Length: 191
Image (cartoon, rainbow, N blue to C red; front, side, top):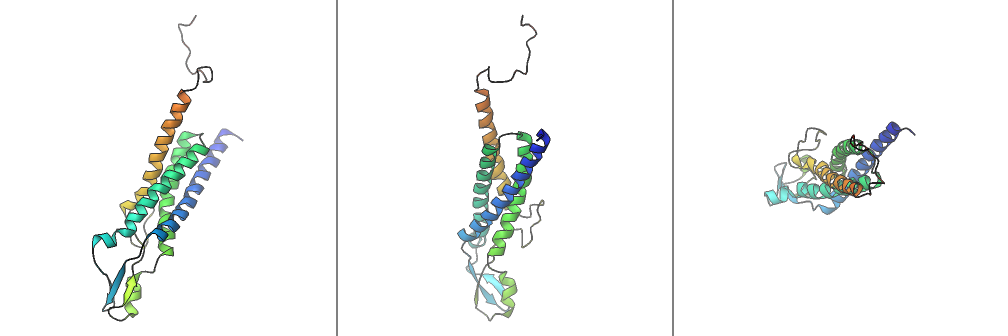
């Protein structure tokens, strides 16, 4: 197999692995999150008790899970596939962006339905759970526009881990004996 084909296969594998990691992270996100309840009044749903700590819990758990999943995925892929560093880095950027979006879509689909839609047919003071979403993103976040800054968590975790891994691997390569390393410089003064 040619070197270019290997790089393409590696990049494709990285993107697919990140997408799968995002799906698993979406399930974990939904499992960790406790849906806050709200009340229906005059056909509208209101979070009760109201407050940023209740409204932010879904976003907070998303950031925690995405950072950890992004870092673990990047560490595993970088360690198992140490070749083509620039291709790996580009694939990690694309894959982690896709993984963050997939994570949201899976978690949102597994969580409760939008209470604003369900509130229309309910009687006053009925309770409904909140839907799983990100502050600022709504139900349909756009992949590359970062409707919510929380969508940057997966790429941030992945890039932090990738930089750490690439620095560790480069240190390991520089620790090799001079006889093991290929010569890239010829000394013009050597006799």
